[in-house]
Image (tube, rainbow, N blue to C red):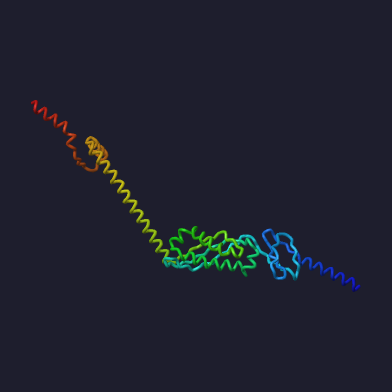
Length: 256
């Protein structure tokens, strides 16, 4: 009876050990296995066997991680204080390095992203921060990717989310934008006046070469304003138009 109970207990113990040694890793997971404290191999995905007490496994997720970088106080190169938040997209490409080279790769990446964000944006002026986000995103991504490569991490993208500016600074930016619009309007008006004066000069030169054209222009102007009957129009008549009639009168007087 005791032998039967002992055999049954051993069987149950063996079953428990078998179930305790089985691990199931999903397609996006890998297991970093240590044998007596030393790195052995990377296993997965699927069903793997771990010898309890001798082997230990650390489960690593290979999917892209979306890391929300909290708002950072940044002083730009032109001494403007702003708060900037960002998002970092990265994933583990080397599970062995992610486990062995750094204690907590998520926290390490988060802290390094914060310091890099402040360092990079502090080298640029506010106008660049607002207008050249794509360039700044790329600069931050390159720095993060180079640093985290030793941790087995690939930073694929960095996006600046929000740039919070002080209210007084917002008013100053609005005034600057209004002044810029006014300046552009004056420049456009001046360019229009310059082009109009050049065309008028060309027209004057052409009319000066053809006196008949000047006379026709007089007649066209007279016809365009003759429709207004509310006022009396005194329009000078060029002597060139009257010259034929004066010659005819002089001939008649001479003949009489």
